[in-house]
Length: 427
Image (tube, rainbow, N blue to C red; front, side, top):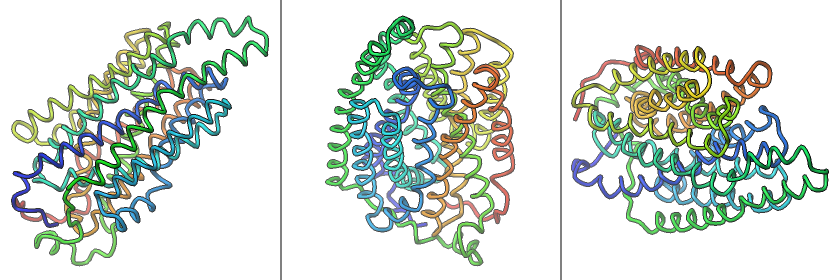
């Protein structure tokens, strides 16, 4: 694909703009860790039902993938990002009638619409940050974006938890002694607490959409190919002719699943291990802190001291080690291992994208759309965790992470090479 020869000198402006986008969708995404226990109380749900929050949010990435691709073809990268932000604002706006009526289905619809907007936004922003500079430092650039994303993710549960979970433990105790009328009144009051923060979110999303639309963010031509890529793609008819892309999609599916488990189950899990909800909300922040630590290591070390493929392998191994740590310990120690999965997950996203997009040339948009569909792992795997938590225990349900990390390790070691034709490295 073509990139401007001066790209290394001109990427700072676009990176600042894209960084703000990563901050916003990191903030919105990791609100789910608070929404799960909050809606579990407000809408009187079991574990499985409460994890429909992640299902509704992340399944949109799968169902909206064709729409995302079409949006980019019509509007291009820059305006496509603005469209995604507006759709997210509409989804956030649905939280207001959902809270006023305490209707769980309407909350889920709002989450689905937000996920749909994010699908468009991420279909544009992730390949954009990958291809605006040298491939060798792609993981480094994505790591910088990851810090923006996870910094926001660390703030989100603290800020929303302040509004929603400040008296959640006391309310849970009081509910058992209330009449049905009193219980309904208390739960209605709890549901209404979500309105003010989501009005602010709607306003911020609309302002940022306007800023993106008016910006001079440059377009990148992904339909053109450099000579080496074009020569290797002579017989390629579609993105499905690239096995390493398809394996990358499944790897991303599993990765997002375990990342969401690490961030979105830890609050509820901590409450089952004797930690109050007012304290448990900080464990999601701890997960984000560990991810940011991993990103910082990536920025410093990749590619100067370690190749992104080797860092990927190390992270997959850490995922397995920490998963067994969760399973063989209990209490706060076990919860801490869940948060430590953030460190294991940190450099996986930055590694999967450039490895999966390597050599696809004019099929970049289609490959990016498939990778975005892989984010649906955040819908399926946490929901499976919720089902296992109800059937067994929330503790034993973490066995689901082990086979996920095993496959991720396979892709890191050799899966990303399947079907690739070796070609000279270009700069």
